[in-house]
Length: 243
Length: 243
DNA sequence: ATTATAATACTTGTATACAAGTAGACTTGA
DNA sequence: TCAAGTCTACTTGTATACAAGTATTATAAT
Image (cartoon, each protein chain N blue to C red):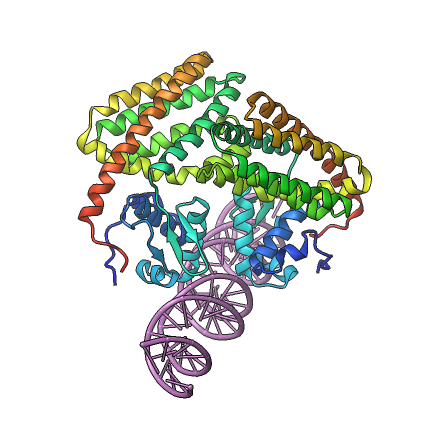
């Protein structure tokens, strides 16, 4: 019934992915972008038909998305929860929470190697900007934060990140794409924030850490507002996926 | 091959559960109790045979346990990670992290209803002790903390809890069972800690909150050491599940 | 004996089939 | 008109089949 549009999630990132993963990533993007409206009830069979796969990969995807709290698995159908401003704020809370924790740990650790790696990623981000590659920029941005989190080698903090990451990634992707078109000047500021981040880790200056952390997150907050606007735009222009 | 032993997870808690859930809960208990050794490679087919179900519920279970970080899904077989002292400490970290956050939120909220509910649970815990029902006591203990966390109505903090809870529950179950046999006097102290917890929430006294929080967690820490000892005991006495 | 090749016994991911259960529409009887 | 029942079209969870891929072992050639 619903005609298959081009994918929202970068297809080249899914080259080696299973059908289950492909559905997971794409479905998540469609939900977070607002292309699939909040409140929609998803049917396994219908999704299987839409994505031209069997129910097995669909079920896998739904379970994953439910654990990320963007859908709710009910006795009959999966209801799309989506992200309202409340959820944006909550994601922000959790990011602050875990990155603060990570920073505390980093303060008492050798971090030369990490700083090196982060600098490399920052260079990559600059190149991505130069070539106006929003997706690549997003990838490096997410990688930047993941690299910091992984550095403390804490499997249960990583567990939290693993659950938050996909949603974050989708948000950042959508936000960066629209910013590349409309607010290109933002990127100098984003780069500065990340540079500050690195310096904070390098000097183990806790004050700078906290400051750069919040500065970065305030920026994220802005991203989120952007996204919200572009979602609204999308919602008006895009034909519904479900009926 | 491996003969099916009695279940470690309370069977009556699984009365309405699917085969997939049953496998998930039981497998988790066997891993956390040390009955399935760390490093063991689990085979979907073998597990399916052992639990007398098909691969579908087994895959579901393995995915869940992987997201909880107690197994690692690799290209060939799932490797049991289990919980070393490092992981115990990490779980402790995350509990402190989220419960501190929750407490901060609670301080600026109406909490009469919550206090009521917690008091009820505490009464239940007392009854469970009176009738020496370790499983029931564990259930109420977990419920106590979950009730506090749910009170702030924060879906991404709840997401963290959802991921941590099953492991916590297993740990508490195992710990309480051994304590009922060996360290019965502990329970007065546990009850006192919980009472303090409630008072902290009731009076919105942040100092008391922090104190009772840590006191409670220090107790958990002790539980964990207990568990460690009983695991070691188990490991010696119990025939391996895999070969 | 050692290396290359082939056979085997696994593995994962996906499709498909089916049983059991549930919601909503459609009678039917009062 | 409404209550009770029945039918139909869904739903979920599980079993099973199969293709494609990957380790491991066996076999053959040097």
